[in-house]
Length: 338
Image 1: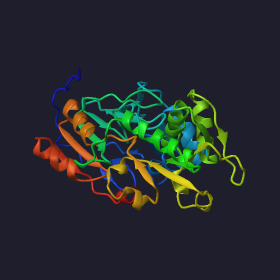
Image 2: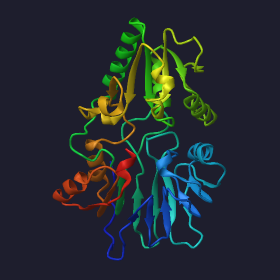
Image 3: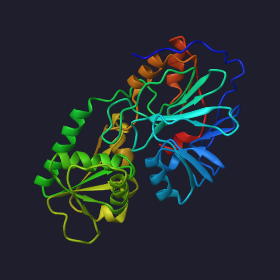
């Protein structure tokens, strides 16, 4: 059961600035900055949440992945639950699981006046395949990533979508086609690898997917089987499923695979036009983000005095205001990233 916090004064709490990352002006603190900063918290290693900073504050897993993507950076490495106090004493920062990608973290910021801010980063409340589940953290100010903050985005049970994935792959193989399963190179692709191995498929991994999977292994993840690294031009596709990053959907490598069945894993699969928009045969709504139900559940259980939503749609903030919460959507241009 979530314990609610006592009410605090928020009159001197300025609105966060949301522009190429999140900035808390009263603490001079950047979170997920997308322009290089002297110091930034990095909630996870996706490219739209980090940059080549001088120093990052991140979990050990995120640090490995972020440095692989961005190059060497100084790291203030925090395991989940390990507090870190800012040198000037203005706040103490703690990371907790976000359930999004390996090492993803929510950021808890406790000030000496008793005020607590939580920045969720991208998160989901459903159990992740890799890493611990995300807790709901009581707070006074909640800053939520709300990518799917619209009532139509209520995801069906993951188990049913995994069975759908298996059916599509089996059907494609029976027809002599190459099933290609797309997911982001960090996180979703490793989810796909795990699910396909659990389904006893023979699996090939695109080079970028294989590289990240190696870092997952380095961080202690144990996959339920082995796969081969795909090399374009090799005649080893028969009877196998290829896992590839989303940025290869329209590549010559994929277009040269004939016949083929293209399957994209994304919460955007809830949209009726998703497969046409993404240029694939099927979109399965297996998501590593919270849906409308879980976004509202987080707020209901955390009971913040103020809510800021970021990314996604303003619908969630409007709905929360109708529910009696002090909520606003932080306007940004980041919708273009999705």
